[in-house]
Amino acid sequence: MSLCERAASGSALLWPRVLLFGDSITQVPAAPSAASACVSEQSRRGSPPPHRAPRAGYNTRWAKIILPRLIRKGPGMENPVAVTIFFGANDSSLKDENPKQHVPLDEYSANLRDMVQYLRSVDVPRERVILITPPPLCEAAWEKECVLKGCKLNRLNSVVGEYANACLQVARDCGTDVLDLWTLMQKDSQDFSSYLSDGLHLSPMGNEFLFLNLCPLLDKKVSSLPWLLPYWKDVEEAKPELSLLGDGDY
Image (cartoon, rainbow, N blue to C red; front, side, top):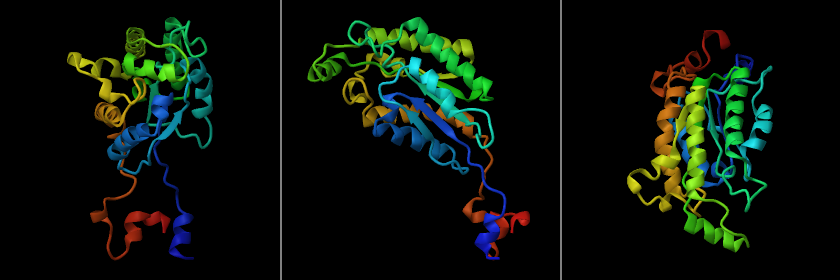
């Protein structure tokens, strides 16, 4: 039997997963570069890039329906070491201008709680969950996008702030970590427009901001993970299979 065949017959490595669950702010091309890079850097113990489950245009009303399709109990369904829940930008749409995506504030809070509770029911403890508030809205830039689409301005930054505060309250009530992007991006009255590509979605600079602030929270989740493979300097030179497979696998 060849070495490859012997290795294939040995025990499999189970890679820890990080699930990034969110709307189009998670989905846009720039977003995974921030979050994925963060997770890859912090989980060099063997974890692959995180699994993203973003759906453009989705709100929490729809998100809580599909979450059980992403994480559930059962054979082969390894629980993630961290889950980020990043919704609110669509929920906070103005009802009169965007009724399909709008979710009332009370329901938004209830939906977030339901998702955290569901995760706990499938053995993902609250310590592994990170809620992320929607970022602030640059109304002037987003209004231009709305006009191009033939509609009126359908979001207001003050309203987004109400949803961000609701997200913070849910995190306090449920005992999860939370990243308050809405407040951090406006700290000290700074001009946050450079963090947004169109007034709503994150720009490369905004994703870098997300990276810098999300990494410490994710690091708490993944830093205690064991190394699945040895550091290269620790690999036995003469017989690397001793280090890479272990006595019982070769």
